[in-house]
Length: 401
Image (cartoon, rainbow, N blue to C red; front, side, top):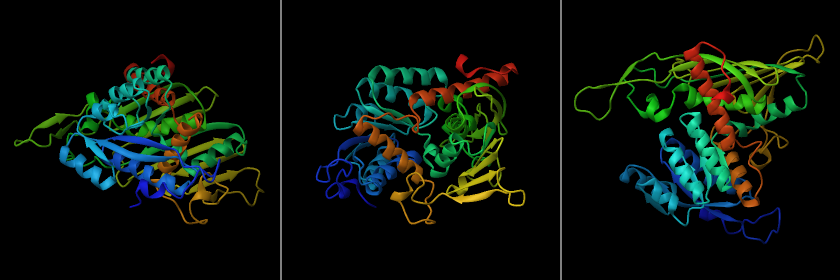
């Protein structure tokens, strides 16, 4: 594994002075599991791939299990480890706090980091609900710190190309947006009663976990959402509580799937859905955008491709064409491999971290490409509106949440 310290010397800030040292920022990682590993991988990769980038210094990592976090610090290359997140946030060597903890531990660490003047990365969803997200957004606004939410799919080159095509009018006036995010990883009735199936810890189920991604992409590609109405379903109501000598069951109180209709402020209509019960679907995200002059289609499991249909083609030539989004002219690709040498799931996160650290180093805006805490708040408001509509049976306004 390439270590961050291995790439400091010799690589310079090519945009300014080839002899100038690259800026460094101390990073504190909260969490050592899936997101802790994925984010750390991005910290290590992006200064190597982007030679003009600032350099993250892996100062500290925190987690609940002493043995696990100690091993993660050793494996990932962090200088020290903590079992208390507050100690990491207060560490003077930590300048950027990355919060990859469960959803119930998003607010307190991020607010404390903001009050200490530290820039913040937080995984999605921003809060368990929009009230929590609003407090987090207000905290970073008061402090004036840079902030980003982990909606990393904005940084897929094919998604960026789709956004470009829409803005250039390549599919004409947009009229419809459709998105589905399908997985199957909790279908087994013996899957344990973990935090992701508990409302008090997660806030919601498939809606917040993976549905928030397609809600955010709807806002990123199309614009703000005016109204929504939805439905949810929980297929398995109880799950075995792990770590108990006798078999005990926990009550599942979040959605296993949701489906919602959307009305965008621009007049576009759409739908979003997500489930963790789609047998055979591992990480299937499908997005379609239809315009009066054409259509775009994207599949996350084929993330180097964008399907494009144009009604301006000749009558005998019409059909979806598959664009291989791997050319040097495509977003970020000139820093990777030759055309056709594809990137994978982890690489959009590399782009995201490069974007954020550059914004911090050069004091540039994180938006519009990066999802700020404001964008995280807006996504949470849409999610809350969907859940409210399940209770009322009516269209709900996200801005009223």
